[in-house]
Image 1 (tube, helix red, strand yellow):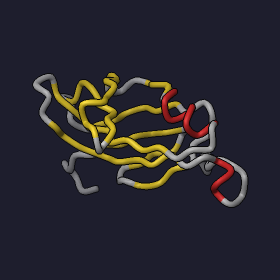
Image 2 (cartoon, rainbow, N blue to C red):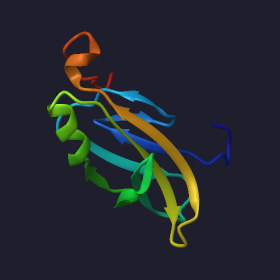
Image 3 (spheres, one colour):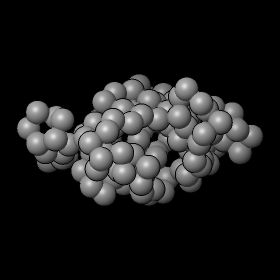
Image 4 (cartoon, rainbow, N blue to C red):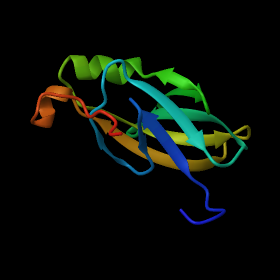
Length: 115
């Protein structure tokens, strides 16, 4: 990212994601939402085919993503758009994450942060 360029990061299980992708988080599935614009106050986690189905989280805070954790524990894939919003509900960033059950990763383990 260049100087002055805005960023939106969804950190899940200690790993930063700045673009849409498939992820294999560890349990518990804890996310922290970070945005460079201080006007971002909340994150809407929504189901892409039905955006009226959503949950709101505070920006810059930890959130336990129980919905995705429960799907993963049942061996099911799930996905959501994470939308960064200001107090006027203007979209200032969007990342789509697909949550893959750990045993589907081919090595039977979640993806852990590397030091």
